[in-house]
Length: 170
Image 1: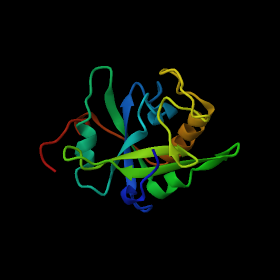
Image 2: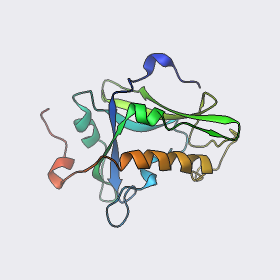
Image 3: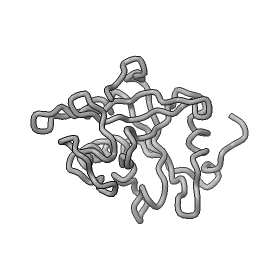
């Protein structure tokens, strides 16, 4: 799969990454690199486009449970995400943000990782060979997670208990 230019979001746009506790925050409430895991068989990290008026309700509508509570959201600039690309050995690692909206979730977008223009999934590594489903901590993904985490820490918004419930009005 290669990135399709027609679905690219403008560099000046901001996206929000929902952050859940306890998986994505540490014991003192600080966001961790787990907030930017690329799950098995997924080709992007989900975010919401903040230019779409329903973005916060879209975040609040993500299923929660006693073991998974919305802690807050990180605001990331699309241009800054794209600038996080780097060379690894002779391979160009890129990050891009593409629209993934649906009728149900109009603000949905994804942060895509690529090597030499080919989009990675959560079960791939630098050599594009298969990895076990529970192996996400490859050096490549750790480096990407660290870069996204650094951006996320610039603007992290904690949600109060009342803010984590989906509202009936916009």
